[in-house]
Length: 395
Ligand code: FEO
Image (cartoon, rainbow, N blue to C red; front, side, top):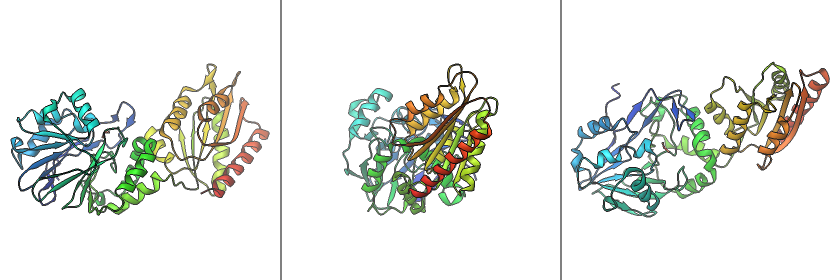
């Protein structure tokens, strides 16, 4: 397949996005092992034409080239800016500069951002309210405010006649490959990772948005990253589960160890949990992809953190992990902390301070000097059994 092609999703509705096979980091934070795509869509009505979102800076000409295969850019009446982040809005100045008539359509918060970030003149901006529509001639765009998914100005666009939802980042996945959901076997794994990295901190707002679109007939979901869902039920069901914080009988174990003492403690609790039929996802932070950790935070009911004390404090990799757990707001219910130190402790206290304000119950904490003794291992086994019991008894 020629990836520079455009794809017709429906009569008069075309994917004109681009694929970024080489990008490996997003927001200087999120690893992108499979690249990503920046999806833009051209909707051609009988009277007017609209471009829904644009692409990351650097791909402007590819976007223009694709638009030109369908229409002259001077014929575009509207650019719909669902979201102001540069991976979707960064090419607005280029596209809007191709003629004098295109108007930017966005929320009132989006209008301010378009002026600040992209210097779009006020007279070229149309501000829309929740549920307002624009008629393109047999193609009606309905705008649905969806604040904090994941920026304050965000909205979804729904194409009424074709029943296509364009929700920008929501329902997305960071994948360069795959035009449609059924072409990617492990799509839900990637979607879960994306949810964990980007949407999970805003689960409350996500729940509200899902409620808002609950009765909307949706034949296709066309997000701004990754494949288009032409079987939308699967991703809608997954989002309902994740937004509701539904967890499995599962524990995520994240640890770092310098001289194997903490690692031995972790192995002991991991074996105990596994023998109690708890699903485990185990990550050594020294060699793990933080996106994978985010994915398993989405549906784990408990977390085990393991870290040595070094230089008078918690190992920096564990500090980073603890901070991420706090920031990503996963639906974890229980935690256990294990630590070994050489000549001065403090890790347990630090982790408890950071995680204390969360709703997690700290089921057990053990800090030891040097390698674990048989007595320490017995304590860890008991801690593992208690944790497993809590996980099983809670939904
Ligand atoms: Fe894909 Fe929030 O931008």
